[in-house]
Image (cartoon, rainbow, N blue to C red; front, side, top):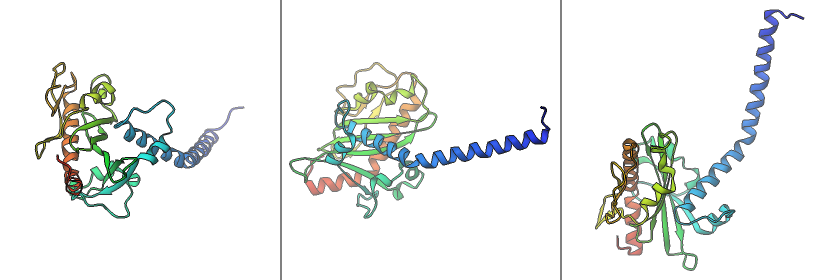
Length: 242
């Protein structure tokens, strides 16, 4: 039976409302689970900067056992009442640098909780096409990089997108962010195929991804400088020789 145009329009409108409502309900119903998955992935990334995670590892248990988190400001002072898990680094990135809340993840020694084995610091920036972010883990000297974990939203596959690969991230292991007392960060060089193993502040570049590498360099330099007062405070408290 042939239907009128009005009937078709009303039917399509009703179907759109019903389907839209169902999708909205599904989205709202899954919101808590989605947030839990995001937090679990973040914990996994934090842990992976300092240790090899065995297959099937209980991430929640490992994280709860090893990590103490809190939030500091750009002066290195703890922000009372703020929780690291609630800080959205993207939102903080849009604020003036001296107004950002800066999450800190400390790995405390299991036999001596007063001793810090590693410090993991979030970093955030802009690559060639979109946001890039990650974590940098420092050893107890607060100078040597234990590991990094980089992610990206839209860098070029096979080029800048390689920042999330183990091959690229392993290049940062053992590098130093300080030259004596000066914070100099670690720089990814232009081009690829050069051995920088003897240089504590340089890593080999990514061929064809100069602008993404520049974004990574800016991200590291900016965020390490934001955390510098926190690092100095630990140095003063624990007599760490940078």
